[in-house]
Amino acid sequence: MEIIATIFFCILLIFSSLILSYPLIKKHKKQQHVVAKPKLPPGSMGWPYIGETLQLYSQDPNIFFASKQKRYGEIFKTHILGCPCVMLASPEAARFVLVTHAHLFKPTYPKSKEKLIGTSALFFHQGEYHTRIRKLVQTSLSPETIRKLIPDIETEVVSSLESWVSTGQVINAFQEMKKFSFNIGILSVFGHLEDNYRDQLKENYCIVEKGYNSFPNRIPGTVYSKALLARRRIREIISEIICKRKEQRLMEMDLLGHLLNYKDEKEQTLSDDQIADNVIGVLFAAQDTTASVLTWILKYLHDDQKLLEAIKADQMAVYEANEGGKKPLTWGQTRNMPTTHRVILESLRMSSIISFTFREAVVDVVYKGYLIPKGWKVMPLFRNIHHNPEFHPSPHNFDPSRFEVRYDAEHEFAHHLVKQILEK
Image (cartoon, rainbow, N blue to C red; front, side, top):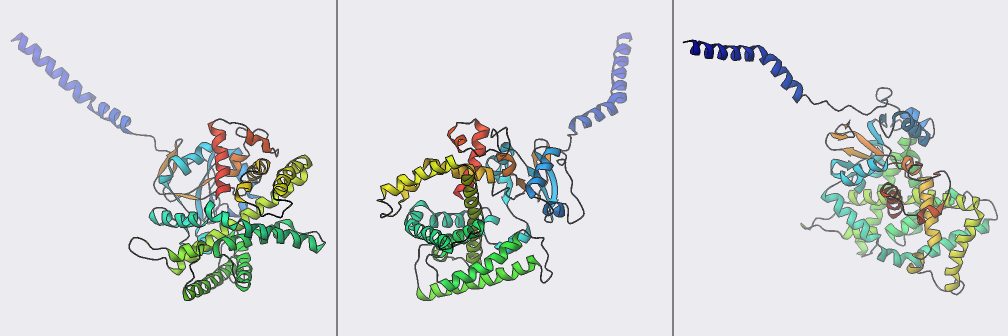
């Protein structure tokens, strides 16, 4: 009996201790299962609706972003152009969004910008449609196609240079470069376009361009409102060109020709709206950025006479090989201008024409312990990366020779971003 009583007592003791400790065990398990919810990145969302848009436009945007990075670090939040945004300012973060985890983000822009370019432009899509349109654009602007355009581009360059000299006056370099790059863009998209169409497109494009970075509102008379009307006129002009090509059954191999001739596996063609949106998108991507880089190159060469002489040597070698300009420039010669190539790359880095790009999180994403909510815009800040002394020693010095040096992985990716911009 004593043994039984002892066993019973032990069982009772164990049972009682379990009963008494159960709430503590349950609480401990709950605590174990509680995972710290990631927080939003540091930063400010500004005023309701307008966020920090006014601060962005009231100063140099590069200063705005640089001051934010200095205060909050390489990842911070803000609210601009009607969108909550997360800014990323390191090569590692850019790689995360654009390469290793690109499937978690989709290309996107604020609605105000989408309306000016066109919602069917490939920039605003991912998946099958994006892949199809991208292949068409790449084919129409492939090295093989560009090779055939070299004589036309050379003619345009010579014509522009002669017109600048003939004025006998000081010219506005940026405005002249915009005219030049727009004409090259027209050549790539439409081939040899009639002058009246070219002039109409240029006139309305300039209005759209002014409204692209303006404060988005539809009040009549505002810059953005005028841009929307000009965009509508561009759509009508492109429709006329499309109709003319269809009537004459022209089979051109320029970008417009590739878009018009495209059929998917179900024999479906692209609509006129889809064609117009992608034409406008390519023109937009080609014109202003190219003109800006060309203008900065002139400025950097003007400031460094020694470098200018090295560039001249590059070009004189080609000139002499072509019997004093009697022979046309070839594709192979454009690939064999080492100093010129390095100057272009360094100009892209220094000027950082494309300061950032837009992506949108398609799911909740956690990066370095911070939450990027689904639907938020994500903006890798290329300029901040290109001007970071950790990746580019003496970043504010124009030094093309830095592209002769082999860098570690982080430096290589920063340079890869520059080269990607050049290729686009």
